[in-house]
Length: 415
Image (cartoon, rainbow, N blue to C red; front, top):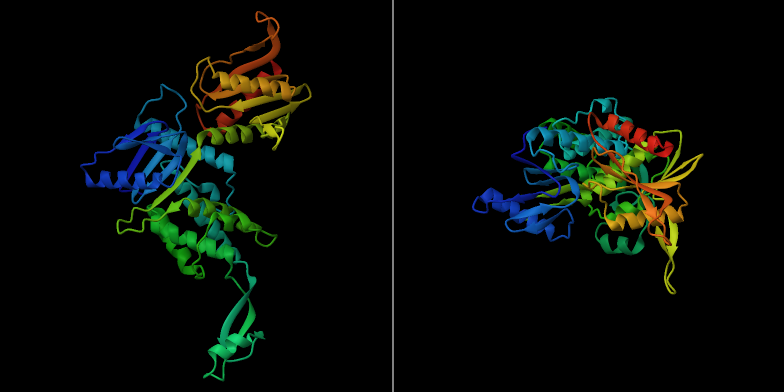
């Protein structure tokens, strides 16, 4: 990654304090306050600074990059080496969860060390668009209106009379055009323009400029979440799926600075609890000896008037021996989980008829076995087991995924 003007690395739940007497820090603080007014949940405002919540990722303000990294242990060192390690872990977790499998021949060579999450998405987007251009952009039919010197398509009589009172040799018509000017390309072109404005990675500048030079110029259009929701891909356009997914992430999280300060804000932030849940889920799906479901729901409560409510564990596992339920929690605990989490697991045990349930945390503690107490006799333990399981990052994310699978297998088999 190029050296941005200012690169700040910080762990989740930590605070960033600014010296407001310095213009650059005061401007950064003001930009974050203004961004916070949009209702973002990534951090809260404190005196002369911000305190980050359970979100990780990157916030870029102008040329300042703020990397917010996962914190898995209370004893983690607040050192440059530790931050570099967890920056790489975060990038590899995101790649594992989102299944990035860029089709460009060089996709396997994507370097993540010392890069930010922003670099990951920018490079993946650039590679996807390069691939699409190399393959040939998909064309679609669209209706066009215009004043022509030859009759083409259908004559729009009222507009023809209005516009061509003097120019008798012209025809105002509506006709069909088959070309590359359609919504998918408008979205990609707009994303490339945003990348040209906000990218600070020197290795990508030339490639972004090259794409803008070779990509057909598209009309300007405001891109909203509703537009993405309505997009439909077919057999011809399915190759655009990954590029459009990344474009959605970039465009909907881009907040241009309309003042002269050019403090554009682009935030690619992820709820660490959800990222952890998805990471464990994709890791367990690699194991073929059991079936894994994510967010498997059952009806739980029905009011007299209104919709039924459901309960939904993070992960449900089925084996020949029965059902097992895991709930992932990105929290730092010792041996005392919150009572709300335990109550939740009791409901899962009952409604899913699970053999046993467990809470899965990051950390290096051994498995803690626990049982629910019998209702009638508070001195007797029931056979309903609810344990606390821990797994710690040690080597690489790929190794970590394998260790998660092994821990769960041991738990199921009572080893």
